[in-house]
Length: 245
Image 1: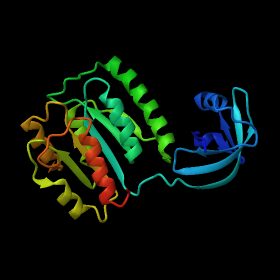
Image 2: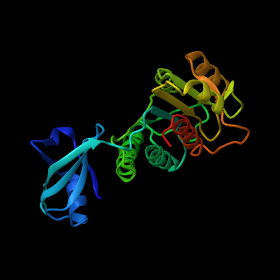
Image 3: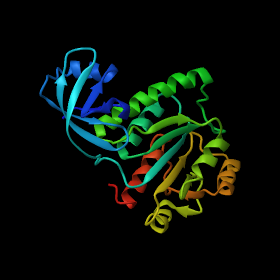
């Protein structure tokens, strides 16, 4: 069944009003009046709808039922990843959204190969947000996770440390394993942050800064993971240990 995100302000009076790219997508799918679609308000509610107006620039769908989105995890996990080179950020965004991340935040780090300019970052962020929206549709999410870039390493760490559990993954070895960190903390937590590094890893001074900010310096084991693999490993572990996989 086709799935679309529509702003909550465009769902009222028992009707979902669809325009822009989603209306174009409906035309591409050749959806006709009477066909059933799912419209999500981006706030965790799915509406089962019957298309009542099709074919034009704007489309309408009559609401015939609603329910909480089944694709939202019970824990909010924000993924913080150092800027990777090439198009790896796109893979990170897509897969993290599919796996249940509530947000993906990229940040600069000492050993980052990629150091995008402000102008380039604006374009990249727009692209990442489109990827997040498509991944949210494909995976049945009830919200479109936020995708952004922190201004500095310090800003990212400070924000991440607000979570009930903040894990800073260090390839040089941590104070605790990911398994033990989650076994101790995962029972009652609702907010988690995971922080992973760039291709060259973290500088020792960055590890100490994270520790001082309140993050748990954590190990993923004896193997060195690629910078696009580490966020997915961390997020998957969180989802598994909190009962969301």
